[in-house]
Every structure is written in C-alpha cells, then in structure tokens.
Image (tube, rainbow, N blue to C red):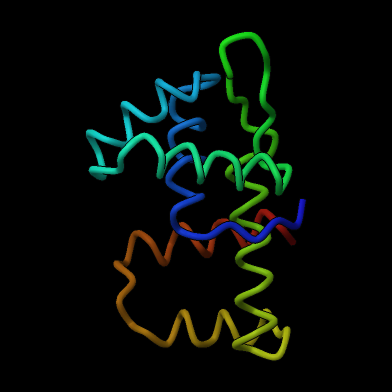
Length: 119
C-alpha cells in the first residue's frame, strides 16, 4: 500500500505494530512516556493516520488497528528513496549502499545469501 507517513505518524504506527490494537488513550499514554507528546498531539496524529487509511478506528472506546504493515511502509519508503535519489535504479542504490564500506563481514555474508536465495 502506497501511503506516505511522516515521522510523527510513524511513531503512532510503531506503537500499534508493537502493541497490537490499542485505544487512542493507550497510544497517548505510551507516546507521552516515550516522546513527551501531550494527548492532543497524539490524537491529531492518530486522526491523520485514519484519514490516510493507515489506521482503522473501531468503536466503542476508539480502538485503533493498524491497517498497513511495517513491511508495506518499508517497501513504499524504499521505492520512494530509489526513485528520488537513484533515478529508479535498484542497481545504483545497491552500489551506493555497498560502497559505504561500513558493513561488517557477517552482514555482507548475509546479503550474499539473500541474493543467492533470490536467484
């Protein structure tokens, strides 16, 4: 699902992905502890996520359910990054990623294994 989420919206989504279905009040309490947000801020961000179709509101009690998965968002954001920064070329993206030389040998081996599985 192609939904652009901003950092604040991702914080709400992360809370749901971790905790499952939660009431808006529970989300607000968690984010107050983690980020210092007040209730109004959290409710505003939840409303934006509902409008975007990322969260479903279930009554009674204003229960929030994530409609999109973390993997959906990661996939969308990766495609957006590749399109914007690498002219849509996954090859250029991987070349830039691998040229950073910050990968540990075990990480590089895991990537090699992933590529082999895809072949």
